[in-house]
Length: 120
Image: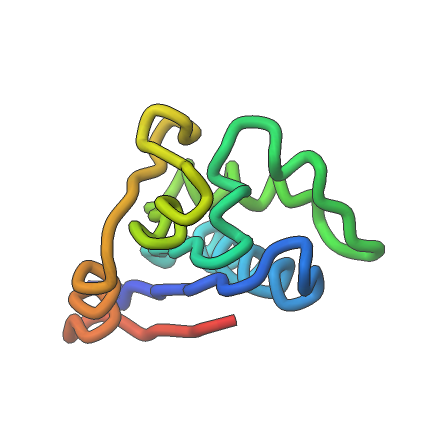
């Protein structure tokens, strides 16, 4: 069984390179057939809303909507419960396929025997 790659994005437009790295690693792993779980925390939580990823630009980086679409097509995308609440984001606001879950879910995924976690 392939290991699951759990990627936690902790930055958004406030730290664009760190944000793009998280999405790029997750999408690259998904494209390679690796099971991926991308967690959006802090300012990256905004990218779980329709149209928000399209507002992100970073020179020499793949478009964020394409990276997010690749992860959603082959893996899971989760928004941190507290991060969503602080931003007034509810499940009904999210892109199809994105869910909201808490820290216990992240810990469970990251500590699974078949998982490796990265935090950006």
